[in-house]
Image 1 (cartoon, rainbow, N blue to C red):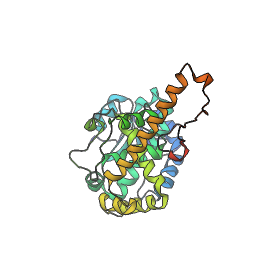
Image 2: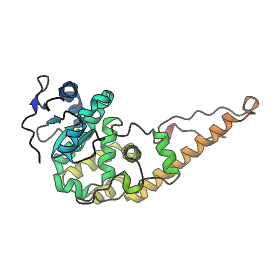
Image 3: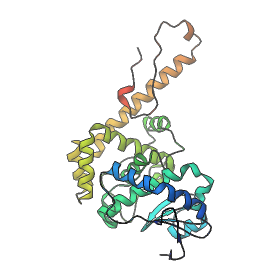
Image 4: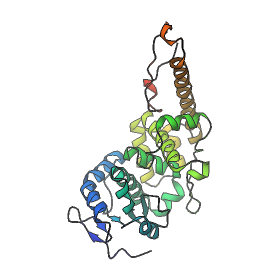
Length: 278
């Protein structure tokens, strides 16, 4: 509820506003904004229905005061889209965090504040934003590490509804934020890989106001729980395969082994590129 009237628009893109002291981060965001908006509109299938504005705070403390979230967080949509001046410590993350938060704003603008939180589960909100941004918010956890955690049972338990007052986060599942974001992003990416046209129809249904559960069940011919079990089983298969190959390559007999080397790709959800060890 704090006023942003003192934030000044940037000359490079007047949709970006800087608090005094945050101009350095805001200048980068202003240069990145047109491409970031285009990325979200392409990935999420529609133009933004309302104007886009970005507010950059002077530092972490100011960001926490405006948003009510922890100062370690670098971006948030709390009625307005805020970026933290703390991003000057991590300039390589500015684009990803900007796109991540724009993904939230885009969907929120279509469905409205209450339905966005009450209807859409947090794993989907964050997973979509991670996917669209190329990993924004999940940078500290690799896909391989996330797949191994899922295989070990240290994972999200995805729901089919959201909650306006009791929104879930990584802590709800005993996960660090970046692990929660990475697992969620991988699951959303897996869903999209099943059928991109159905995924687009699913997004359209959500933006049109349909319930998440009904839209999901129709699009993917199964429930959230059923699709997660398939995804988790594939994570376990991939993790087991990587473990067997690691053990083989560490074996003192590997030089004389007649077995053909097996190459395993990274990225836990690119299943078609995995091969089976003989």
